[in-house]
Image (cartoon, rainbow, N blue to C red; front, side, top):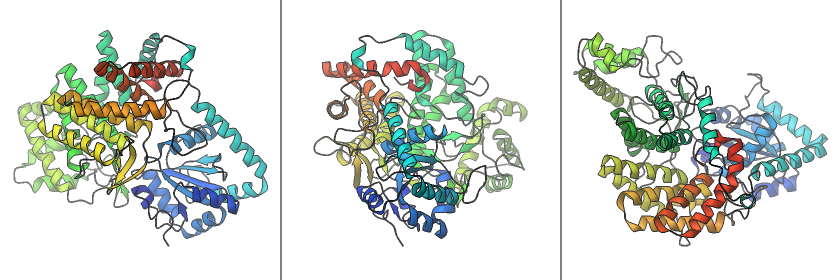
Length: 596
């Protein structure tokens, strides 16, 4: 029997619409039901491209016996973290306080007034991996609710207070009048210390690209001329482009690598990663004039134009990690599958197949569950020497064979695509296409950028100048967040810089005005939610960068640039207030605030 998710538009929520669990979206009705029936809330937060979210859905949420327990003792709420970053941020802070770590699916138990008191991430259907079964957890929480209610309520209050303190731990901009420029040097020093000298990137596996960190290092190189800053970025980008985290056949980057060598990815592809990385590779190409970086950037953008662009000009959000119920099935190959596909191409001779296998590390036994994840195992120069030919000949052969495998792969069942359009992520991709069209003189990229901007302004902006968060099939959902306004303004500024058409600058200034009018914190900076957003247990204000620049950091960047274009004092004043309020936290945790 369908549950309460059937009228939602989020692909992630719709994946759970036929579960036997009586799911509710985040809504007043769910909390009212919990209050009236005196039940705790089970909050499950995930996203459509998340592998372990699919696993838990298959193991537990489709299971009739588990659903009976959930429906009897809990009110269950399902949230798409990409649609509701505010809910995700609030309860992830709670989960990290409870367990010291976080992740998705996020599984948090709340009192009927939304206060968290217990949580975890993925729970298996039977006890394993050192974790209790999900059913055991449900029974334990139900028992706690009945037998130790006061302890549960007290824990919820204490944890909510912790979240509130964490959200408002920034400084007051009125407490200081000058910026601490020495923080730039401290950030550089910390990032140098955290750099993985062997494999590139920052920190151990799992390895995430971290574009905000790399952009910061590039800016430091430009300002100081210190070669080591550029070298760290180059080493990282080279390792990523050579690794399995990059789709060597179809272009585009997967979300992260599970190993330290960037070879074994988590196979989902996210729009925000590819937007930032396209820009980053272009920036390094500008600095080095090495055509390899331009090539990676265009492969990313061509992949997005081919597979992630809707007919209206908006960009889809993500592609799943799984197909046919198996992680990475679309992307991995057996030795014999590659050999058969290449032999079927009349242009391929036996030596060419050997070249391909050596170039991309393909073996009979494979590197991932007896299959091969393609990565650059040997340079074209080495192959040219071994096969007594030229580098250009090797490159031409590999290009032809990649095209052959792309055609063969296209016949497979493709991963599911999350086809909702998110304003913030679209703003980042708009910026990437606009900048690429300018730097590469690509009119096709410019047309994509213009259509993207027109889509955002006509479909996701209302008559009052207010941005929506999400669009799908002609329907907009949810109030826009700070990051939606800021990232879209950033994209519009890049398009203005490319075309000098004043309508794009006007649109960016309108979004900036909305940021100042609806998101400003009187103590300095900006909240993540607008002043007319629904009331939650905390009004979030997260200054730290994650895989994307924080909304506050991007808003500040936008305001500084707009002051340069317009000379409007209000933009400079708001930007300075934001910088002053952020600098205390950024000074304590510099590597987490690189975009500031």
